[in-house]
Amino acid sequence: MKTISALQKVRSEYKPKLPKALRDGANVEAKRGKPSGAAGDEDKIQELFPNLFGQPVMEFSNAGGKKSAQAINVGVILSGGQAPGGHNVIAGIFDGLKSINSDSKLYGFKGGPSGLTDGKYIEITAELLNEYRNTGGFDIIGSGRTKLEKSEQFEKAKTVCEGLGISALIVIGGDDSNTNACLLAEYYKEKNVPIQVVGCPKTIDGDLKNDLIETSFGFDTACKVYSELIGNISRDANSARKYWHFIRLMGRSASHITLECALQTQPNLALIGEEVAEKEQTLSEVVDQIVEVVLARSAKGMDFGVVLVPEGLIEFIPEIKKLIRELNDLMAREEHSLGYLDGDAEKLKFIKSKLSGEISSVYASLPEQIQMQLAKDRDPHGNVQVSLIETEKLLIAMVQKKLKSFKAAGTYKGKFTVQNHFLGYEGRCAQPSNFDADYCYSLGFTAAALIGAGASGYMASVRNLVKPADEWICGGVPLTLMMNIERRHGENKPVIRKALVDLEGKPFKRLLADRAKLAVETAYLYPGPIQYFGPHELCDRITETLLLEKT
Ligand code: FBP
Image 1: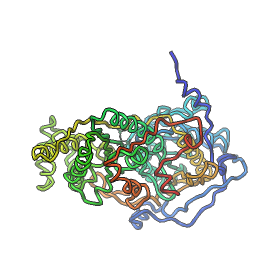
Image 2: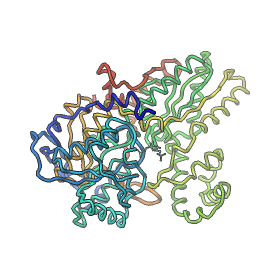
Image 3: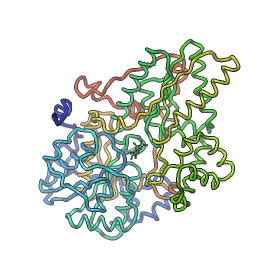
Image 4: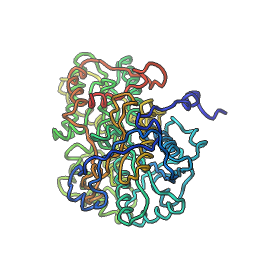
């Protein structure tokens, strides 16, 4: 039996590129900017984070390899959904820490944040790490979605860290996990606990970004994997010419993945949740938009096509958004009573009886399967688990119904045969692209440098990503600078602001410019698989989103 694939073997030799500032190790010069603010609700954020608020942005430059005398013990956590490149972040942290002092140690907490509070850990050694360099997945230590927000959890974590001589923690996670990192950093500063907390921007969803965090890691690889598959499906559609393919794509809230994949593959229609919200489109109007494309293609003899549906779409449709908000509050409030109810029918009856009039009829108008999916348990951060809601099937059923009425009226003579797909887990653990392998390694190295510089309450930042890695700029962004107040679990909470698709931004504008043509023409692009070896323009190609946003 083989233990690794041929690609893994060759790929393990890959040496990720680093920015110039980190070339001689993680012991860097740190330049600090002006005091920072917050993404919104500044007064409230200042009140909630008095010890962290206002920290300056940090930018690193090469210190010429000067060594620090002190060894540092650091703990790392992988938090939330998998994203390609996580192992390289850990490799970057490890190599960075060793460059500061070869006696530094890295501990990995197992299964996410709960590993930290329960004291479940392994020491990450050079030998262990070598098996994981440049590989996908989070399996070196595993991940989890436990929310770290209570002082008892922070105290437990402190005891575990003290036992291991850990003076810094690195949380690799998305917006919610980095919000937790900020709460933890504030608590330790407040209590004079000598443990630094630093975050790294992870999520395939691409919604953890701003001027200083240009993209979250994993977005690049995941979108390339999905685009390869969409390209293959589109070619099948164009060959068989008998199916409409509805492809739902991951991305819990924002539609960045769908937008990026649409730019890479040119389907007939890509729905964008943020646009639906902006135009206040009802569910029925979204269905009309799809029907229009189906009719137009059918009139030209093309009873086939490809539609991309972001999994978060449902939350952007105004009437469903209101419904979800009321459901979230209701489920948080009635958690106890719901726990006593037996079976789906009982649960649905109870929920319907508690929803307000108008909202209750929106809920009742949805197919029972979708009603049930909407009422499933929230994740620990209070989010609806949209990956479990089959929005594409809801749309297909509604499109079928409308087409039937056109057929009866004699205005449509085509055929509408559908295949549905959901692309999500296929991309989250893919072998990282060269971009993600390099970016992640640089993020990890930067996190080590932040620790070396004594920072806490920061996120590692590597930017200028459209340029070669040599010219990437690295440093730290205060976590409080990215925060605002949002409603979660029925309460107003400080959270890192999610970056939704900017409807004024170049990526969306590009989609819009081509939309009418793409609906009636068959202009699919077939990106093929990620290339790891070969010409630079193929192997180091960045996402269309990054390219359009930053050039
Ligand atoms: P993160 O935000 O934690 O990175 O996870 C993103 C994501 O992949 C979403 O796209 C998806 O909706 C969700 O995780 C699925 O969650 P789970 O892994 O719990 O099934």
